[in-house]
Length: 211
Image (cartoon, rainbow, N blue to C red):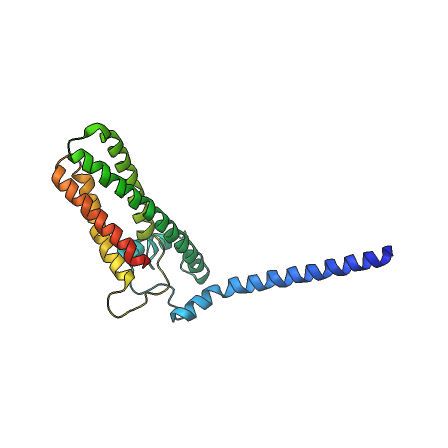
């Protein structure tokens, strides 16, 4: 009986070991083929590791002659581009999360700012603190988007896509956000107007991208 149990245990262990080896081999092959699959889906050729069009921050940092290439921190190779795409995915996901946090901060600022505009200065310090936090989260999220590695290829679409609208609105709310911070201590009316412009364009940018 003991011999039979030992035989069954050995057979089970061997089968489990083979199954694990097969799973590891499958996962390894899948990882090796990830970049090739992405290239085929995007229609990118063997030598096209970067898209033709990139925003200036991406070109400055990740372009063929960008800082990451010159310093050899991230050489332009197939394997490295695969890693960059994973980094890009994480950065853009974090950008989205921070975006909702920033939107909540803007709403709070709108409520507090209206009270201050109506001569209720009891919450001035709180308004200033929330403003600093909101500005920090906004520019952190903007940095994650601006400096993320570029995609494999930019898809061309007819008409105005949600992605394009999101980018156009980003230019608007980025400018308005800068104006809001610069005018905070100099012109209350323009500060308020730019704050509402930043909120409106920012909220719309999130809506068009999500829906």
